[in-house]
Structure formats: C-alpha cells, structure tokens
Amino acid sequence: MADLQDDPPYAGIGAEDPPAPAVESGALERAVELLSVHPVADGSNALVWTLRQRPYHDIETPEAGVDTDIPRLRAGGVGAQFWSLLVPPGGPRDGATDDQVLSDTLEQIDAALALLRRYPDGLLLARTAGDMADARNRGRIASFLGPVPGRTLNGGLGPLRAFHALGVRLLAPAGASWARDGLTDFGHEVVREANRLAVLLDLDGCSPAAARRIAGASKAPVLVSNTAAASLNPHPGNVTDEVLLALREANGLAMVTFDTARTGDSLQAVADHVEHVRSVAGPHCVGLGAAFGTERDTARPPGLTDPSGYPLLIAELLDRGWPEADLALLTWGNAQRVVRDAEFTARAAQHRGS
Image 1 (spheres, one colour):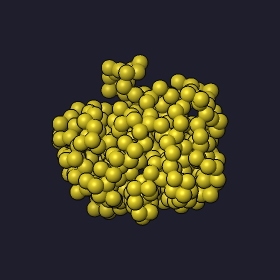
Image 2 (cartoon, rainbow, N blue to C red; image 1 turned 90 degrees about the horizontal axis):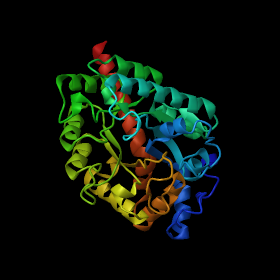
Image 3 (cartoon, helix red, strand yellow; image 1 turned 135 degrees about the horizontal axis):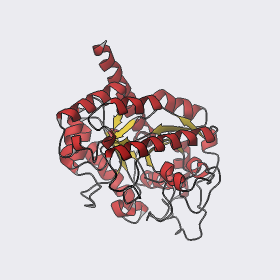
Image 4 (spheres, helix red, strand yellow; image 1 turned 60 degrees about the vertical axis):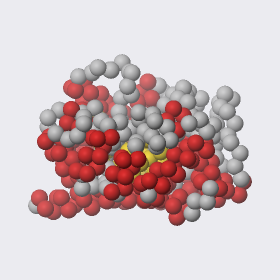
C-alpha cells in the first residue's frame, strides 16, 4: 500500500482552482499516515461515462479537463473505488426506454472492464471484501463495478444475474417502477435476489419512503453511495434523518459527497455533513462517496476539487477531535464491512436454497 501514499497530497493541475484551505501541518501529516494504513473506499465516481466522451484520455496522466486520474487517486489515499455505471441525467438518452437503458448499461460495463484491462498496474477488479484487501496489499485500487440502474430489470431477474456474472456488485433501484414509493411484489423479488448474489442496493435518488422500505426489506446492508444530510441542506438528493436512522437499523452506510450544491461551498461544510451523518447513523454507518469523475464544471469546495483532497478532509476531522478508530471506519472499515456482510448474507441464502 505504500506506493499509494508516497506522494504528498496532490496540489491540482489547473491555475483556476481556488487555493486549498489551510490546515495544521501536524494534522495533515497524521492524515496522510492514517490513509496509508486505512485508505479511502470511495462510493461513487462517474469516470467511466466521462471517458466514453473522451476516449483518448490517459488516466495515468493528470489532465485539466477531468477531475480523476490514477495519480490523484493515489495522492488522495484512495484504495477502493465504486465506479458508477449510471448514465447521467440530461444526456442524449434522456427519456430512453427500458430496453435502451439496458443497452446503455451493457456499454458502460464493457467500458469499465476495458478501463481495468488498460490500467492493470493501477486498478484491480474487485468482487469481494477479500479483493479489497488483496488490492490494497498489492498497491492497486480495488475497483467495484456499479451501481447499474434498477430500470434494467424490466419484470425479470435475468439481467441482474448477468450483471453479477460480469462483476457488477451494486444496483440502484431509483427510477425503477418496482421501487417508486415502496416495493412491489417484484421489487421484493429483486431485493431477495440481490441479497442472494451479494449485490448491494444503492438507495441514492430513492424517495425517503422507498429508501426506508428497501432498507427494511433487505437482509444485507444497504448504502447510499453519494449524499449529504438533508437537515443541514434540504437538497432533494440528500438523505433525511429518518433515512439515516433506517440505515443505522440496517447496519447500512451513508457516503458523503463533495458536491457544493449538496454540502455547501467549504471543506468545513463537508465536514459538518460527515459529522451529522455520524451523529445520527452512528460511526459504523458513515463513509465517503465524493462523486468525482466528472468534467471540471461541477462546483466543489476549495481543497476538495479532486480525489487528492481527501487528506485535507481527514486533517479537518482530526482537528475536530475525531479518534483515529472512527476515521479508519469512515475511510475504509465501514465500506469493507458492508461488502463483507453482503457476502455473509449471500452465503446464508444460498445455503438455505441448497
């Protein structure tokens, strides 16, 4: 893992970036040291879609047009990444039929697998918690595929099984007819099959009622891959305290984003959201899902404009008195536990069905 941390926090590559906020040098050194042992498992990055629009971009070389590349992931201490395979809203396929969404999703999976093949020294396909540890020990970034959209399951479970066989480990019910305000009978079947396959359910974008219903129906932990606290900022993409309590009850995970529209425009505001999630959901149910991987037109707080900024956030939390044990859960431990618990649930379900 040492080679993920040999460089200091990356200072950015664009002169247009605002200066990073000042932090105590001792706290920053402690943050970098902590991340060398407990790297960040980030819940959401849209780089796969972005690279489909920029097919000749080399992510081993920093480039001003995109906020994610391997040098900045390493500088930020990122040891695991969930690569979102959702097609962003507002794109050329808005209003697509379910069949078109399925086709787009297969294209996204193919692009993600091609990305991992292209950069084997930096990225390693991960399917299990054991793969996370193996990638960390080998100096690679564990790469989970997902989420994929729940709309692709148009009345049948075959696509979910096919996605699983291709390596997908995260499914987003938001927008699916079976999970609009709760769960239909077919929705319950989807949850059971996802549990059996150890495919995690990502509640990002679900209504509070649907999120609580899915969290209660799933025997495995659920997560929200990128969010913030609605009680601090009533953005429609942020989770309410009721959902955070449901995640606490389900041993799930809320992963805090670095999107200014959802958190506020400072590193301290992001830290406030992290602390609120920990306060309501508990230290075992808070994680980080910055939602990087976009072209550089998404507003981000100074210091958190790309993955290299993670040490600054950890330093801020150290200055606020966070114990290192809680920080180790925030960065790595909680994400690994959720993946591992989903595997335990799957083995139990498969045993009952045998």
